[in-house]
Amino acid sequence: MTSFRSHWFPVAAVHDVPFRHVHQAELLGQELAVWRADDGFVNVWENRCLHRGVRLTLGINLGDSLKCQYHGWLYSSRSSACTYIPAHPENAPARLICNKVYPAVERYGLIWSRLDGDPDMAPVPALEDRPWLALRGIPVKAPADRIEALLVREGFTRCTDFMFRNDDDGLVLMVQPENTGRCVLRGLARETPQADDLKVLLDCNVRLIGLRDAVEARQ
Image (tube, rainbow, N blue to C red; front, side, top):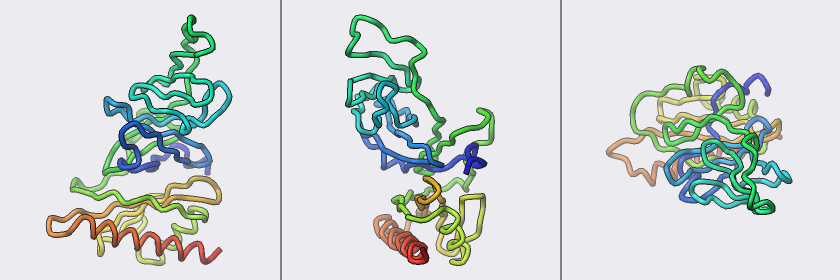
């Protein structure tokens, strides 16, 4: 999976990061903390406090920073720099105390990130400029390549290493490889004026669950 570290993957949907929430994600074996600051900026960080290694997703989103629940270390939005250590309130933390930050792009109702790569590399895969509905991510207890093989058998066309589409029903599906044994099936549905968005989302959710059940049954 290391060869895909420079690829952009969806790691969350926009609806996964509501006001003052911290979303836990995983990409290629790396745990991530995904959160939106009050100014709208989306942060994707390594999910680990630098002090004792506690998951930052257990902490508190203060709007402009994350607070670790264990010993209260504060990390600033955007830079991830530690700005406050309760055990030493009179001393400003060293500027080098920063968490690992990953790039984040918000597009098509999804939040995309990657673990490595040149900052000037091509952006996330392009889709036509039209309204899209982001579907609920469906966790799958199977390696990414198994769900990808199933999508091809089900009539989906591979667009990229992890993106598939079916123009007959307007679905674009993406596979987020969490680790060697699990992945998340994500998707977008075309939004049309004559369709009921809620019904579209419910129907697509049933479709994705069916795909998950089919691939897990083959284990």
